[in-house]
Length: 201
Ligand code: GTP
Ligand code: MG
Image (cartoon, rainbow, N blue to C red; front, side):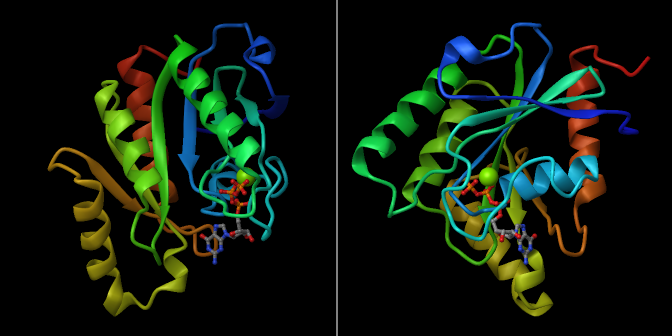
């Protein structure tokens, strides 16, 4: 899809602030620091649309980016960051679960996991939730540039097994450094949009 516009719309702390224009949404979920915000920037080819940071826990709100006045990319706040207080961890769970449960126009949730690590319990919980709610299982494996080529297959296999992925679930290795996977992710997004009858004018 050719990007004509990509606008930051709102950083929502409560569901009252979610956009109300009923455009379809695609959400990106995953642990803190996995690369959600970086991926959104890569997809729309804008370095600083979504704020990124090497300090985990950067995105603490639900951020909505409107693409081509057609669809929202939703940057969910990361989970599993140890230094976040207990209270804020509890708020995190509630806020994400409320978002996921409430959005009528949510087309799919993509789960991001870091290629270097075995998925955590929280990753598994998130993946089970995604599948359990009828969404397509799409796992984007980030930071592939940090793993030697010879080790990649083993890591992908471990991720598949740990998450209990099935044959029709998709796993896509991606890197914002090398742009690996960029086209494949766009293909998945466009297929999803087509499935819902959403096309560019
Ligand atoms: P939170 O907002 O804390 O939930 O994190 P996030 O998932 O949005 O991660 P973010 O995009 O801010 O990236 C975290 C760090 O990882 C940043 O320093 C990025 O530059 C780096 N990073 C993201 N993607 C990649 C990648 O594909 N390769 C490499 N080498 N670094 C990456
Ligand atoms: Mg972020």
